[in-house]
Amino acid sequence: MKDFRQDQQYVDMKAQFDEYYEQKLKRIFYDQEKVRHRYFSSFVVLILLALCFYPAVLYYVFTHFQLAAGEHDYTGYVLSSSGVLIMVLCGPMFLYKSRVKPEIMPKFAEFFGTFSYDYGGTISDRVLYMSKLFGSYNRNVGDDYFKGQYDGVNISIAEEKLKNVVRTSQGKKEHTVFRGICIMLEMNKNFFGQTVVLHDKGIFNALNFMKGLQTVRLEDSKFEKYFEVYSDNQIEARYLLTTAFMERILKLKELFGGRTVQFSFYENQLLIAIKTRQNMFEANSFFCSNLNKQKIEKVFDQFYMVFSIINILKLNQRIGM
Image (cartoon, rainbow, N blue to C red; front, side):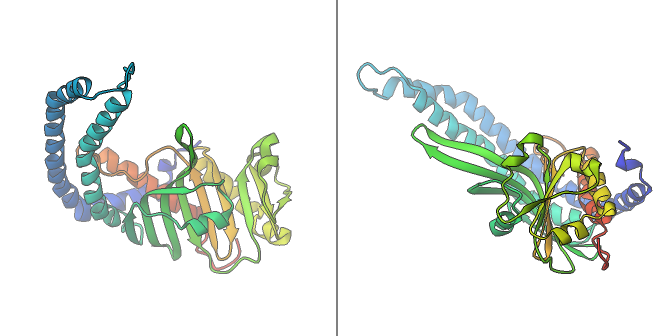
């Protein structure tokens, strides 16, 4: 696969970003480095205090807590003490991240367009449910959330972790339904029906029960190899999934390194879900200098890949797909 960094469009945009970084971002990162040092110093102090006092806490647990006759299992007490310790140690990391990200990420995204930023924000559960791209879940955990406009297209970008949490007699069990980024694009017109493009699961496609939707058979064998299409409007589905558009989706899949990419066209929006375990948009690090240009360039590449979706799918054009 050709490295997207070799594309002339990427080279030109990267040169513009380097100039933008020097003019708008470098000073902010420099100031945040001072903040990081303060929080990191607090973290080191807590580590030293833990090394001194945690053994004493364990000694107190073992010598002062009375267990029922014949019972010698202190596991619960030890786990509780350890949990409290971990929460305390993670405090400086959480506080640092919650302080610096809302300051830097809007400025970072501003290079690409007009965006607002919400740390921990998510796309609404109604939108995710209506898309039919995800299985059953009851917990939506957000990280980075951007909303704005790029190249004339309204767009929302959210890191999402969808979980199904079940309480049993043995305790709480969590199953991760989806982890990755969701990209919601507002189209210039409403769709008559709903068309869903899912990752092809081979013989397990029968498990993809789509209430009210039917399978759409397409003539592109390469596209059919990777995707399974469902719709309640066969004519519109074929209108949307032209040969050119299917080629763009395959290019998009290639751009994201073959990861699972799924689509849902409904109402006046297109929702794209991309599975990835990579923590996206992390320009700041608690354990690494904020002046580390490699991390900044990595985030630029991630933004470039996301916004390339609009360029690839040509959603800014006011004519069909």
